[in-house]
Amino acid sequence: MGVTYILFQIAVALLAIVTYYVYRRLSFFKRRGIPHDPPHLLQGNVQGLFTKRNMHEILRDYYNKYRESKVPFVGFYFFQKPAAFILDLELIKHILIKDFSNFSDKGLFYNEKDDPISAHLFSLDGPQWRILRNKLSSTFTAGKMKFMYPTVVSVADDLITVMHEKVKQNSSLEIRDLVSRFTVDVIGTCAFGIKCNSLRDENAEFLTIGKRVFVDKRHGSLLLGFMQSYPKLARRLRMVRTPPHIQEFYKRIVYETVAVREKENIKRNDFMDLLIEMKNQKIQLENGEVVDGLSIEEILAQAFVFFIAGFETSSSTMGYALYELARNPHVQDKVRTELEEVMEKHDQKFTYESTKDLKYLNQVIFETLRLYTIVPHLERMAKKRFVVPDHPNFVIEAGQSVIIPSSAIHFDPNYYSEPYEFQPERFSPEEAAKRPSVAWLPFGDGPRNCIGLRFGKMQALIGLALLIRNFRFSTCPETADPLVYNPRSFVLGVDGIQLKVEAV
Image (cartoon, rainbow, N blue to C red; front, side):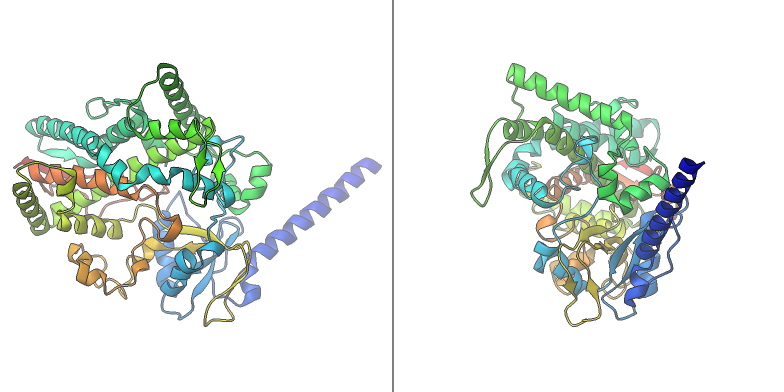
């Protein structure tokens, strides 16, 4: 009886401590007088996430509610994690660029010991991120892109061949799936030196697993919310986020690829070769510091994030661009005219140098990324207490998370008139110069911007250029209007985009 009573008392005490701690977390902004919506006990301000609403919709509604409130930020609870929801673009510039040293961390969950695939460049913080970013910075230079260019064009040529075959059978095609197969084959070749053949094999393993990465969850919303809200505690508890089948697939592919290439001294001059080189030699950082090369676990994590980021973002961008070009035939005709002029200028050769002349097609890609921002927001975390300039009552505390709602900013009529209209002319040099640079953030900005943006833009531009030059895209009765997004996906995903396709 005595032991039972003591255990009961301990349980009550622990429950009281947890209740008080959660109350303090969920009253964070109320105690500071910061405007915010009352949070749900478990879901904070993201109620319906992954079930009824995607993150883009949640952020846009919240942003539109407060954007005219004349405050630099409002409170937002990402599950039980209080975050400064940034509204002011000047403050965004401070966070991403001017005061980057104080906001270089993200505060996301990763577990390099039990979930090594999660410890990639996108998630890491502190010295680990800085050293890895320095190690990988040479991988995505203009010179490396030029070297990979012929490989991407070769896969794009395969896409055109497959498209011609399919158009002869049926003019109505599910275009989102086809461009996914293209980017899977590109990334599989450039990252792993593996011919995935997903353009012809509907059951290709790389494609199947790649599609499931953003949808399959190891845990339900409750545990995912806990890991998001308390990443350090979740790491101490040795929690794992990556589903086992995802972890095992990429681990098998990467470990086997590295072992075979090292044993047989195979060189393919691709992304994996660069990672293996960094594994087997000391690396001198920009500041002169010499550090050990990459571990096999670091190679696994970087190869994984390169694959999923390059596959999903580029294929989604291509699919949404073709959808808008089908709905705006005058824009499509303008792109096709530019393509013919550039090809004539370069003796009908599609070279790396010729892509630099596709200025209007680049504007189409930029406008697509504004209208269909694949990753909904940027996250940062303050290292030290930060008083917002000219707003002494608005303070971002040390250790506090920051959310920059990039997908919502892209629809702000203060920066983009008629924001729901597809207008590539917004990104002409003259128009772009009229806006703050941080009004467009699909790749982030500052020292922690997307390291692979050059590669992503290159493969999307090559794929779109060859598709538009060879085919005309238009809407058909099966074309969704508006598109319906998958709420289970963290990125902006649709189940399909049906278009009418005709050979030019």
